[in-house]
Each structure stands twice: as structure tokens, then as C-alpha cells.
Image (cartoon, rainbow, N blue to C red; front, side, top):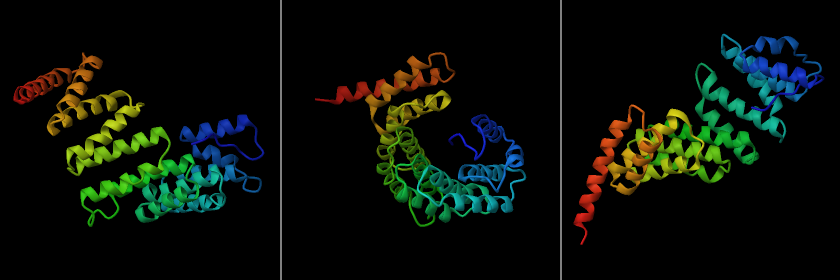
Length: 259
């Protein structure tokens, strides 16, 4: 979310108000809000503040939504962010989510402002809805993956493209889809870079293990060896070393069987 500017205020004031929001002090923002002089940026900040108020009631969510509807009348980044936040309200913040409405807003934003960061981010959220929520009674796992995969070509931000590959791959595991279908997404997410910490470690092991199960032995070997080189002292290293031994055993058998 970008730094929020405030109509009639200095940059220092804007910084202070933004710090109040990210430090979970929405009342500090609302205390200085002036509806008579507020521009669209300040209105957006007011909506975010109301959205963050505790307790999180549907009345507050409706108030925030009404503000976002007003700010969304335009074709700039403020409008894009306001539309994205409307979708998030319906997806996550009302007591009873309206996933269909959230999906409609994400799609609307991506159609009207496809190059906006908020539209790009919204496509990832839309994919999550398609993978886990929308039409889950009617759509088999393969169809749900396909409905998310078609969104890949509409995303051009590398980090978000990586995230969507990762989410599709992980959903494929949950939905018990064929490993040759799942693995390219997980490998694409890994190759894109930018994943860190335990998530990165988990992904390297996961690709190694799933590749072994799929019979992609060279790929399995590469990922297990990479894990041991990168995390030699981790508790999981012993188990990974044993799986690498199994991979090498199967590779040796495969070579012996070749004419």
C-alpha cells in the first residue's frame, strides 16, 4: 500500500498518519480527518482506518465500503486501490463473505486497469478464490487448477507471477493432482527467486521429494543436493541425505537397465 497523502497537510503529517495506520492506531487517523477538506487520498485513508477499527463490525465494513466506492470513481491508482479494498472487504472482512462479489471486483479491476499493481495483486487473490472457494462442488481439481492457470498470462509483475505459480502448485498438492502437472509450477516459483526463510527451505525439500515420487530423478537429485549444500546443519538434513541416497540408488538402477 503506498504512502497516503492528506489534503491540506504536510508530508510529515502524511507520514504520521500512515504510521498510525500501520501501527494499528486508526483512531489517531480519524481524529484529524476533516470531511470538508479531505481529498480522495484522505478519503481512502479514512476508509482504511474504519476498516481497521475494533471491533470489526459489518456496520464499519459497510461504511468503509461506501467510501471506497466513491474513491474508485476514476482511472488512477487511488481508484484501483479502492476497488481492490472493496474486493478484500467482501472476501475477508464481512461476517458472511461474498466471494462471488469479491471475484467480480477483482475481475473488473483487472479489465479496467490491467497494468495497475492493485489489479495484478487482485488477480492472485482471484486465483485463490478459484482454487479454493468458487464452484468447488462442481469443479474437479484439474478444472480448478486450470481456472487459475489462465490468469498467469495476465500477470506481468515477477513477484506476483511467482506467487501465483507457488499457489497453483501447492493447491495441486492439496487437490492430489498428477505430479507432472504440479511440479513445473513449484519449480517456476523457485526459479523466480525472492522466497526466503523456512518457506524457501520447505520448497526445496518439497520439489526434491515430489520429483523423486514422479520419477524425475535428476531433478530430485539436484534439489536434495542443493538442500544439503545450503542447509547442512538443519535438523532435516539427515532425512534429506537419506532421500538423496534413495534417489541415487534409483538412478543407478535406471542406468544399469539401459542398453
